[in-house]
Image 1 (cartoon, rainbow, N blue to C red):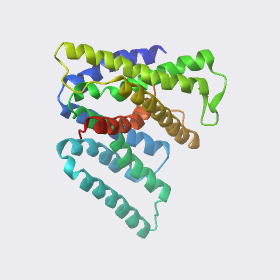
Image 2: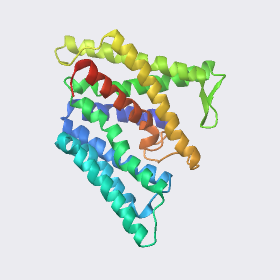
Image 3: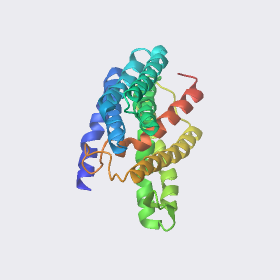
Length: 275
């Protein structure tokens, strides 16, 4: 527990500096590192395509950087990565060293899909008022995780998904949904205070938006947590990595964020007609 707290104490100011104070390029660079590390952790966890893991890691890191530099060509980059993966698989098959399709799909997810999901944090940073809105998925996930933990400890009786995550309970899941709303409420209060100080120029968050994003984000976060837990159970992995003491790897800490960020970016884009 002490290690987890210390990581949070050091990590929160660092995230605030990169995501809020520094320009969007800093967010893109941070996400590039995170995506590369997450891709490496996932490929190692599922023991997929050992001789191409470095290339997949590089591809994952390129996605947020390319997205920052030129969003219009992002599809071209993704197609290029995808075609290159399949070309490598074809050449491997011709050398009588076939790549299992499960390895190829793991590479596509680790090298393309997962980086796109996490890169939605960059998309949020690029919105009007993005210096504050980029924290929306983080507030939802932090509030959801915290309240789910306390609700599970105090009231948890019925198991939610015992084979996937034995410690999760239905009561904890409900607490997680309420925690997502609580996290959004804290963010709404912070934005209101910043608006009075003339620092925040972005869109305001009404209570309907707060409740909707909190509930849907809390649900998406729990789905993300369980989804990556399924992978760990299937391949008998305790943690994806050891980068963050007390937390595990990048995927262990940001699995729920990977699911929440795309949802939040999509909803805010619809609500405020910005992309």
